[in-house]
Amino acid sequence: MQLVEVHTTVGNAEDGERLAAAAVEQHLAACVHLTPLRSVYRWQGRVQHDAEVALAFKTSAAAAPRLRAFILSQHPYELPALYTLEVAEASAPYRDWIVAGTQPG
Image 1 (cartoon, helix red, strand yellow):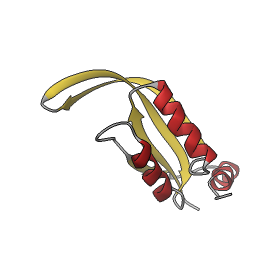
Image 2 (cartoon, rainbow, N blue to C red):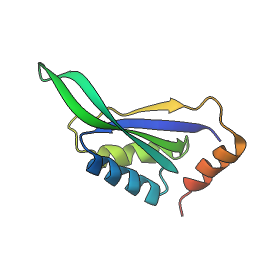
Image 3 (cartoon, rainbow, N blue to C red):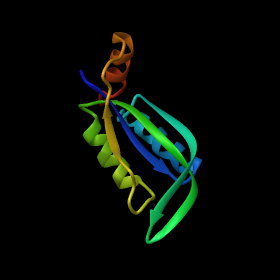
Image 4 (cartoon, rainbow, N blue to C red):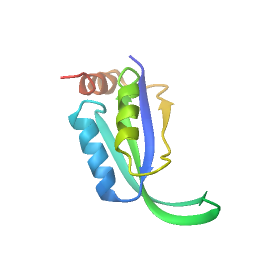
């Protein structure tokens, strides 16, 4: 079973915790890393400087489409960054844990 990480950012820790907890509770991700960061980007013609929280959802390729649909339906941003990275290699016990954690149940 292929593992992936689904990434997005949100504007504050509360939104990040809400999305992370719901994804794990609904078996869409086995784990989510939340990391505070600073972003510089252009939005609506202006350069913005904002604090954000990056979320890395650890999930299976099978669960990823449901996870992405969930994130898009619950995301507070008008245009959220949402992308998926394939995990090239993972230990078998970790892979099995991720797969088990993303089984509907």
